[in-house]
Amino acid sequence: MNLDPNGARIFHALVVSFAVVFSMYVAAEVLKPLALAILLSFILAPLVQWLVRRGLPRSSSVALVLILVFTVLGGVTYVVGDQFASLADQLPTYQANIQKKLVALRPQNDSALDKARQAVSSIERSLRPAEADYATPVRVVSENATVAQLRSVLGPFHLTLAFGGVVLLLLVFVLIESNDISDRIVQMVGWGKIGVTTKTMTQIGHILSRYLATLALFNLAFGVVIGLGLWALGLPFPALWGLLAAVLRFVPYLGTIVSFSLPEIISIAYFPGWTQPILVIALFGGAELIANSIEPLVYGKSTGISPIGLLVAALFWTWLWGGLGLLLANALTVCLAVVGQSIPGLGFLGTLLRHEVEVADDLRWYQRVLHRDQDGAIALLDQALKTRPLESVCDEIIIPTLARAEQDRDDGFLEKRDVVFIWRVVRDWLDDLADRDDVALTAPSPAPAEHMEPIRVRPAPEIAQQELVGIATNGGGDTLILHMLNLLLKPSGVRLTVLSASGSPLSVSDKVEQLGCGLIMMSHLPPLGLTPTRYLIKRLRARHPDIPMVVGFWDVKADPVQVAEQLRSSSAYHVALSVAAARTMILERTVPKIPALASAS
Image 1: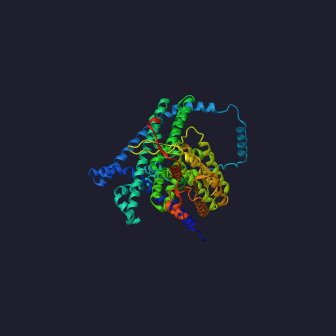
Image 2 (image 1 turned 90 degrees about the vertical axis):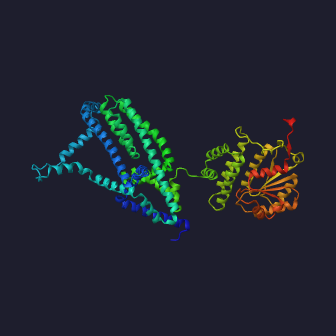
Image 3 (image 1 turned 60 degrees about the horizontal axis):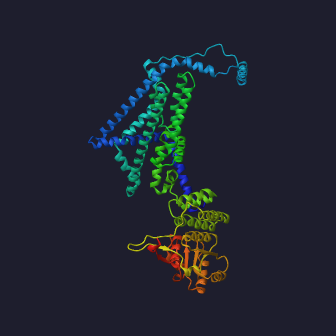
């Protein structure tokens, strides 16, 4: 299979990605505790470092931090367990209220569905074979009472306890040997890339710490709001529900559902009516709605990942590693995004996950017009016009887009109708611009030098009798650029008569002579070929050697000297790379600057 370089690179990236994902799926039982231990190490490492800087040995610092963490967790567990025990003691008092509500919800008469269900049950009973009238012998095996009790209590949690033990061991190892692990990672990558590797690891730690701190504060605020709201509604144990809401929100998306379900069930059992349960739903719904509107923006800025990137990452990691993957999704995605930004070969990860994608204004506008979104394209131009002058909008957004469209049409990516649509959007915007009150078209007025009188511009009488001709060398795009130039020249009282060079150079030269031309402004939009423009310049210069000529080669990144050399007549005219420069050249040759008299003010 023969692939071009881009296709081969994409194919190679897909194969590597598939191999990595497959390996992570197969090695999930090893990687999951390791990933959780590393995440916890990012949370606890600042505390360990703080104790180490105070002179405490690293192993003692790790032990002290872990003792503190387990003390806090034990205290929280005790409080939550005590609250749940008190709640369990009160549940029997809610039984009458629950039965009353169930009776109220039960329909008075049997519905058609109930009757059908009863008929099916009757048929099943009639078809069921008679049960044997003898019992199956059961062998009773005696077991030590203590062992049986421990097994009954710890049996359902033995896998969780084993997993927690592995995570704890890995966490202790990572915290104590963090410097050694860092050195090994650098050595594995190569000491020649120590700068990139160290910067990447530091950036991951910084972003993760900031994200986890933001997450903790956000969840704490959410829990406080829920606790106060439930207290105001009169629900028992509001502090418990607020604490659970804060803790369970560390599990993305599903945690809120669980934290809402428990107080909602208790509200149905506790309150005699339905008003308070509905208000509980409204409280959680409103808090979650506000949180969901703020949370992606806050987390996106703290992690540098887009909201849609966080959502897709949560789905991917949940599919790959289950519930633990959902818990670790954001942190793992942060690591991938930072690695993608630091390693050139994985740059696509940074592009896919990054919160802010830098797109040049001309490319964004080009995208709008390619989508045939005329309203969006015009709105983008209007927005740009609020922060920059018209000539900058033309030079930095519109003209590069016109050039790119011509290049894409020449390469076969666009049809002529697509380019014509872009021309129409630009023409409509320019036509509307001259009549708008919110856009001020002013003549250029550079600040006067020190000890010089201010200047004003007015058309020279000898120039006013002559036509200024603008020649569009390659059709629609050049015609639009000359229209832009006319818009910029309008405040100075200067106007170009636009001619098309679609005919023969001789006919264009005849029109110039008939108009009594005082200046020729030629427009050439790259990447169209220079040969017709070069030939037309040669014909016009031979027939009208005394007429000033300005050639607009609309590429602000080009070198005017090189452009003039390409046109092979550098001494015969001046080259402008932007409409702003073209306007200045035209005004310098047609409009004298007259000092403003004090009496005229």
